Amino acid sequence: MSKDVSRNKLLWIAGLGWLFDAMDVGMLSFIIAALQKEWNLTAEQMGWIGSINSIGMAVGALVFGLLADRIGRKQVFIITLLLFSIGSGLSALATTLTVFLILRFFIGMGLGGELPVASTLVSESVAAHERGKVVVLLESFWAGGWLLAALISFFVIPAHGWQMALILGAVPALYAIYLRINLPDSKKFMATKTERRSVWQNIADVWAKPYAKQTTMLWILWFSVVFSYYGMFLWLPSVMVMKGFSLIKSFEYVLIMTFAQLPGYFSVAWLIERIGRKAVLIIYLTGTALSAYFFGNADSAAAIMTFGALLSFFNLGAWGALYAYTPEQYPTIIRATGAGMAASFGRIGGILGPLLVGYLVAQKVSITMIFAIFCIAIFIGALAVLFLGKETKQQELA
Image (cartoon, rainbow, N blue to C red; front, side, top):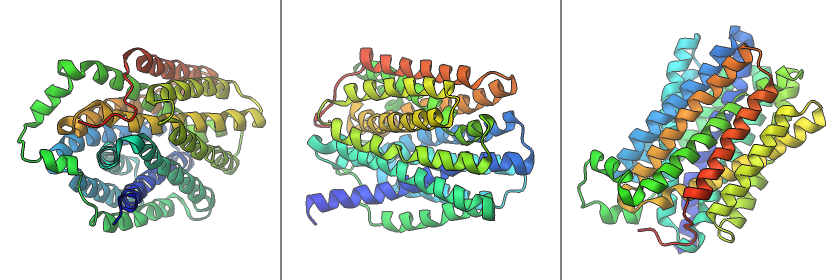
């Protein structure tokens, strides 16, 4: 098998799992809106559905990131996908909010563990001159998953209920398990396998002097990006309803906005090896912040669609650069630990974002003010990259 074919095979195998994970997260935003009507949920309860998912992701990113530096990237891939797909299927059977929340925690663990490990594996398996581009292309599968989620939610939930959407979300994940059995582990990881290190040693090394500055930068960046993303996007269909659109019409508008994610990813894939990680992150985070501000202030259908599409374009482009940038901050021996810890800390933002929106909506705080908070948070992330980040474009991984 040629190097190019194996690279493409790895991208597709990892990307399909990424796509199915995104499909679940994407459908959750629509399912929350449907459950609110079926189970008469309060705004706070709606916020908890999104937040429990992020609590699971925080735990999963930490636990499975640590585990990936012990037993390998491939094994963790398979474990996380099994956890996620079984949980997704079972959650279709939930009849109470409590059971649904417990299952969302386990789904979140699988999802949170998979994403940093997938980007770590791909980073370690691709040549330096195209590493950033390939990891961003891996992230672009997330947009495909959101598009599938929006399509399923638009056509399936109104006609067949949210349970059918979750069952559909669980089925294709089994295909990715089949593919991943044939997936080779990272050669860089295999080369360090003989060096026995404790989990605590790896954790300490992430904060040791050589890596403390980039760890600080990553934790601020991850927190600001995840806080704003989950706060804004999990509430998007519900925010559309609050702005006066019907549930069906809000699903339709969110579907259209979601299409803007793909050019966001592809533009970053093109730019990241040309102008570097730092410049891409700063440009796309600034674009996200401004789009969030104007979306919050939008009061016409045209303005909502325009700034919603720009929000999708810039935010998901920034995510692509984030996943390319994160594994490049650490050597192989602590790479998955460092990436997992940063993602785990970021997921705390994912817990607080949806909860904050729920509580602010309950307190009758305006959508304008809520999105202004996200605008500020994203600018803080951009400043962290500007002042603390180092450029890693085309550098060989240690």
